[in-house]
Image (cartoon, rainbow, N blue to C red):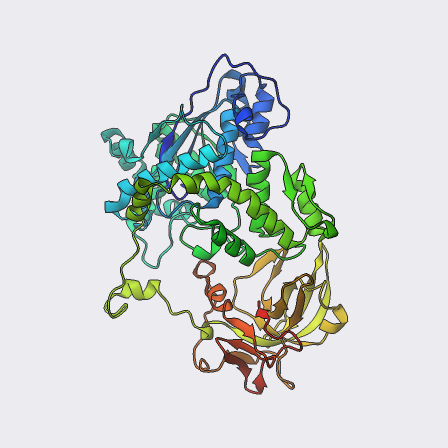
Length: 562
């Protein structure tokens, strides 16, 4: 179940004259098609485009030959929906254009079961907020609302029949399978609650009680989908089709999440905040992996508009119109599109989508609903004393949690699949050198890197970059401008691989074994990592050091460190 929850049903209109389209776009005009004059094959292509995986393709094709598909998407009413919700919304528009009967489930009960992400007293308010914001999103992309019906999950999930089926299902599903199914969706904690084990089974039962042919969700739902396929037949129910969207990377490169402020753009963020967040977003030149900006272009802007315009100054070639995503990705990978131009163009398109949503929520009623559904947490005097849960949730973000070390570049070569990336082997004082992928081709030669002493962040979670896992981050100083400048940080002369780098005043702390991506520890600390006027690397004006002296940068005074 995605974050959020309710039922939206769209009944196909009849008798509407229209022309057959071979190219689909989610505009209002295209929504008028409603599937009447599309062949089963055309409907199949429209329903499955941009999906990462479909379980039950043959069954889907057979249903489309006989009648319209009945499909549902569920969203648990937890954190505020963000711009990544445009991905399922644009897909829902595709379903409607293909003539599907679409149901959207606001799973309020699931929101409570998932480690109480939504407190019981706020469930009703969260459902109302989700209903209003989802309707505003659909209106923003041109989907008519007159035939939509919304029903919350508890309207049927508390019935006698549903409750009996929960008991029946719990008698056949193993604890191992329930835990495995929820691993990517249910919040993982040290001491799991029984509610988290119930969650996947309830989502499986929803398919039967909503009387649908298929369930649609993100690929993170796959284990829940396969649990449904395995166990629903044991209750005498039909195995359903499952359709999965890819997960859209957040602004920092990981999953975009309601619970992580740095990773997302809220639907009600003002235009200035959108600009600020996009400016900070991860968008390395030539790197198309884990690029949330490019993913938004692919999965939202192209399905909605069938074209995308890169806005740029005439001296850099002027505006360029793209009619398919593949050309955008190809040009970005070849560094024909500058990250700054891509961000500015997405900012323009995104604000056009958000403007009507922001305007709708300017009314006193919806402002009150927003603050009531998501009240600002009150600060307890004296901090977290006597409250272990608060202490665990609010771990101190300090630089000693970073495992920063001196490294020596043993070898450096071009990445086999990315011209802008280097593939390096770097000695960090361990038995084997680490593999590091860095986007430095445009800024420093292989000869300058070879045998050089560098500074590495070693406890980030390893991440694949164009198919090769990078096991550390090579820290550099950078200055943005018409011509971006980047330089690796320099350890003191005579340093040895593996020597620890620390911030003055934080020498004694123990680094985390691995920085959890969801906690965004490095990202929060990175904001204050700068190069001083004396070319010294600092955090909040405290020097980065080894036992031999300061970490420095040759020329980029005032630069940022990343």
